[in-house]
Image (tube, rainbow, N blue to C red; front, side, top):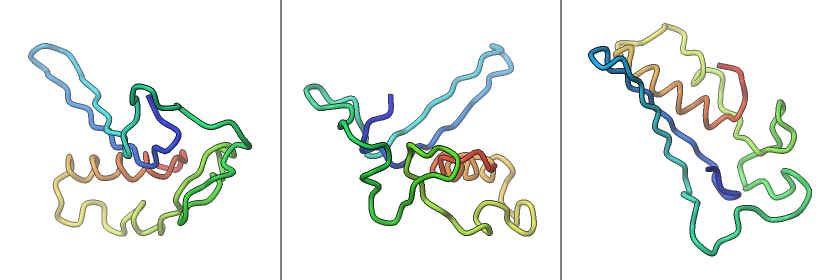
Length: 102
């Protein structure tokens, strides 16, 4: 569940070939789902974007952070970083963007 003040989402997927199962785990920050707290506030969508964020180009009711293109598409594919770490980082960056550009 995503909370109104959640600004970062990072997810990872692991697959077990022996059990033929996958698991997807996501971490939300700041965390939500707090008993007695409001999930969201009524108002205009994306009207209270935090400093450093803007209204999303693709989802106009959400706030997003615009990252430099170099962080999204590095010049050389992995730059010596293992493929799995690279894909984990890209998953986190894409989730933070709240855009479908990756």
